[in-house]
Length: 162
Length: 78
Image 1 (spheres, rainbow over the protein chains, first blue to last red):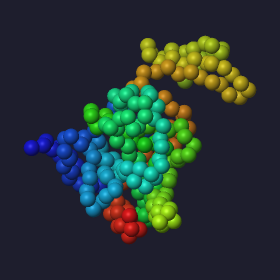
Image 2 (cartoon, each protein chain N blue to C red):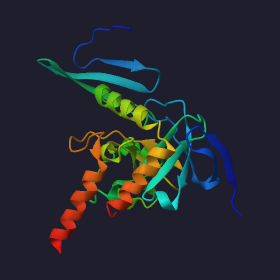
Image 3 (spheres, rainbow over the protein chains, first blue to last red):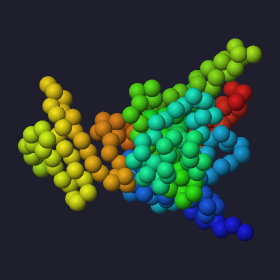
């Protein structure tokens, strides 16, 4: 039997998460430095999107996504200090099976205007559930990549390759 | 704000673990070397601000918007 934790989020209501899906951001994330603990909620109908909900502040809720599911060639260079801050060794992403990578989605009332932040990916060391928002020094990525456009381009690319 | 004047090769120490050294000056640019523990992230100010603004916009995620996105996603055949 696994432990669960209950809390309330202003937008998503009563939430129950597995204790093992609670992560700690020791430095918080920029703009929310005080908030350290977040719970990850996966709901089948919402796939590939996940909810990342603050346990410390009911008003704060993020939606995140595995960027590789859309941008297959996404290649964030994560520095040694960031890996060390997470308690990982590196040197490359592939070497750390405990590392999970997500990006934050900025929702909009119009799904066409939904964007993903590839400039500041969320990294989680699942071995100790420590997380950090990495800020990339990489001009290929911005804080606003259109989501539905990217998914169309991906389909187009697949169609061409058939 | 504390204002200090430094020459190339000189440094500033913050607490016992952070050291910022002026490496060189070229015209309008100054190269700084920063030594800090790995648990203290160091960022360029303007990029940090952009991430902070994006986080603040994203943090108000709501159930209705997520539902609309999930439906649009499925309709797009994903």
